[in-house]
Length: 279
Image 1 (cartoon, one colour):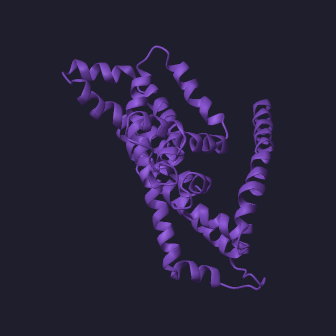
Image 2: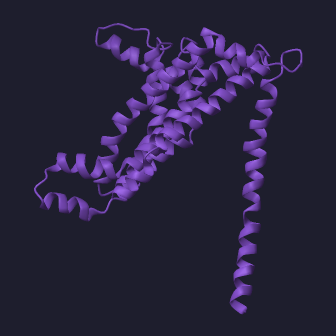
Image 3: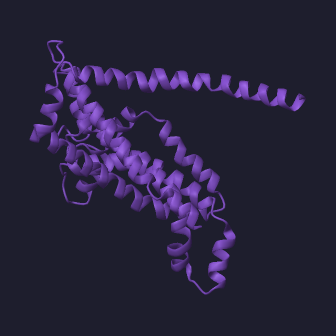
């Protein structure tokens, strides 16, 4: 009897503790999505219309912009993954990996706007990079306001979000698996390919989500670093809300962006259950 009372009390306590979570979810996730959906079916004149949705899916400009956003987000993700995985693996083998983890976290505390302005100073005509090129006798080059500069800065900003989850995933691998692989005659490359990489895929998936999804909606870097030569969905949303004041079209693009993010999460999570069951 007493045990039933205790169980009932703790069940009620758990229910009470979930109330703040559901309130947060309602006010800061569901309500903004509902507001976007409401605005997307309204024209500039305030009337209900499906013109925004029809215009988005029938306009080659918006479809091209969506494809361009995917291309740039994919490039940023692939570059960061290529750099992050070897770096994460090497850092987990060091004696001071917690120090390195802290050093990776510190740059994420700096505002992205400050980072962008710092790179403007570094990559500008009179910046450190061009001064170095001039010292080498090459002469100054147009580096800022190019696709290269946009990819460079975006990769730098997103890199810690790829390294950290991969580091955590590699740290969680049981060292006995690696030792068993070596005992069976596998070299370091074979062990990495057959043991470490498959077991760290959870961190890779998390890193891909943490990099790809924000890269779809970049708009500050496209303006400050890319010089508006790089146009993404985030840039279009900013333009419609702050310049043209066409909130309906901006909300429509925002909803499309949210759906694309859910699609990416779905694709990256696909097969996770199988990989867990396989090991």
